Structure formats: structure tokens, C-alpha cells
Image (tube, rainbow, N blue to C red):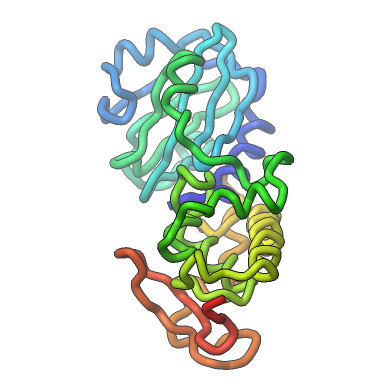
Length: 271
């Protein structure tokens, strides 16, 4: 599932290509993905201009010139491709938005959605999201305070979008590894020095993931050499049985709250 670095990569690439672009047509093959009929979607979008694209957690918001917004959540299996019909991958496309310079294809939206909403509706929809990891107001003590009432493990809390928005399975594992903390460490036992390492690791790992184009390797355009660049730089995620890059100990896969997690049993501690 795309996480903050993947969605921020999408935001930047979409902004380069679509800011100020006018929609000339749409095609919807799965109406459940847009929560309205294909005809309603087409009528609502033709002639509209995209002003800019915003990210909130794992969501993207396309701001339209009439005050409406398109709220996108790709969820598991969803991704986007921008280009022509000749360039697009041979995959099932649920939604296409057409521009004079190319088309934006939404692929794998079986669980995800692209909903046309008002500002108020989006604010209500996203009201329960936790703060963004890069919110300037999220200083160390406020970050620690997000977990104050939690009694479970740190990974389950990091991927809880109501606690903090944008982190999922991959980056949660990478963050706790960078902090030297086990993903199943119990929150009340975590010491102050570890919170400081976790806070720093969160920013460092997410910034590296974003700078390298995230870990999803489905290209955004033909010839895309940015998307998926983080794939070869992950330290623990999806590396079960491979040697730890710090100490050589085999990476282990465990299950936490019905989620898989990867860790180095030597480098990561319970506090």
C-alpha cells in the first residue's frame, strides 16, 4: 500500500504535469471507485481545471477551479500512470481523467477510491487523521504525547492513522530499525532516549524514502526512473532470512497485531 513517501512522490510528479491543466474528458469502468455514475462523474469534471494537488497522510486532494475537490486514497493495490493510451500498462483501469497533454490512469482501485467532494465533506472525512510526520508543530514532546494513552506495541501505533498519518507497514519497520527498537516493543516501557531516536528516525527514514521515490516499483510515466528507487535501500522490510546490513544477523519475520513485521533480533531492543 502506498505510504507517505509514495504519495508525496505522486504529488510532486502530478503537480509538475497537471497544475493548471484542464480536464477534457473522463472514463469510468468501475463506478464504485468514484461513488457516482460514470455520467455524473464525467459531467462534473469536463471543463474543470486542476489548480494544485495536496497530500494529507496517505491521501491526495486534487483542488479544482470551482471549489470542489477530488479525494484519492489508493489503498492496497492502487497506483497511477500518466501518459497516452499507447504508453499505459496492460492493466485494468478503473478511472481515466483526460487532458490535452495526456491521460491520468487510476489502476487497481478495487479497495481505493477517487471521490468528488466539497471542502467541508473532505474535512469531515479526514477529521480523525493524526498529524503529519512533517507538521512543524509536531515537536518531540508532542510526538511522544501521541502515544501517551497507548499500551500496546509501537508498530501498531505507528501505523494507526488516527495517531499519526502517513506511515504504514514498510516505513514503520524501517523507522523502528533505525531507532534500534523492536516493532513489538511495549509503548509504556520505551525510555526517553529511545523516543528521541524514534522521532529522529521517523523524519530521516521518511525523507530518504521520499528522496528515492518510495518503494513501489510501478512507473508513473513511460521512462520513469524515480518511482521505486527506495526498494533497494530498505534495511529490514521484506528481507526475511537475509543478513542484517549492520551486523549480519538474519532478518526475522514475525506477526504483530495480524500484520507481518521484519526486524534484526540483534540490533533492535525492547526499550
